[in-house]
Image (tube, rainbow, N blue to C red; front, top):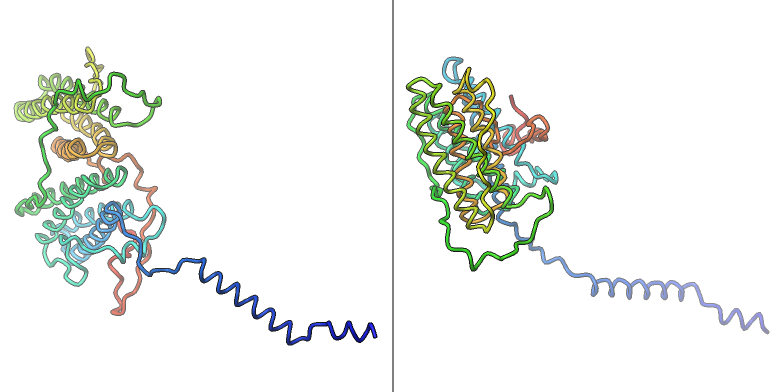
Length: 371
């Protein structure tokens, strides 16, 4: 009898299957309620990321255009200059790659800024290429005013290099200088009475920390030294170079006044000037070359200020970076690929390999590393 009762109480196989099915449906239903549905709307892309993506795509398109022009040019018709442009643009594209490695999506979603030509309408002349290269450079400088710190410094470096390379190519090929499509402010923020707005005891930053104040102090010191060096060099240059040095000396004197004004406006102490500086033998033997190296040394100072400042102070720093880079080239100094940044181009990531398109040609946004 007991055996018969236990058999009757035992759940039939089909009952266990039904029970498991009901539990599974309950779990699935609960999960559907608890897990939020994907709206299908991608997250908004920040201005900084958009600026980087656009800069990357424009640079890759320019690189493709320079490569095409170099391949069709005769050796004596600017092939080497175009090859150097390809190298420069390759370095820029490598620096602009997504730091997290999402290269393919970045290059495919970026849209041209309206300056460089698209892959389907590659420039057919050197004049067009020079104009578009300059346009890309001015666009990068404009975006650097609004982008976040690190990317702002990178955009300022890329923009400065592209503008100056366009000017160099225009001079070498006897073409009209490209128009400045984006006007940067050149006047420093005016100092205002800040006794009431500046705190009596400003918070002391951590030792060796990078702040707007430390970046401004470095710029002030670089201008103080530049004034001293130019004053000494004036006596050692020939008449032509002495006239250029005198002009640059006045520029540095104005820059020092502006840097001191900006420092005061930021409630920071203006560094006192040194009584003198020890000058190397090169200043006596080759003062022009030494002045070029002096201008090059100021580039990272302006680059730091671009990254660590905002608004009018950053705009002034961007303009100072471009002007210092231009003075460097005027003295014959070799301008780095990314003025204002201290890095080894050999450590940058390589560009991805070309992806074939339906026409059989490599996609412009995934060009490989070039010469």
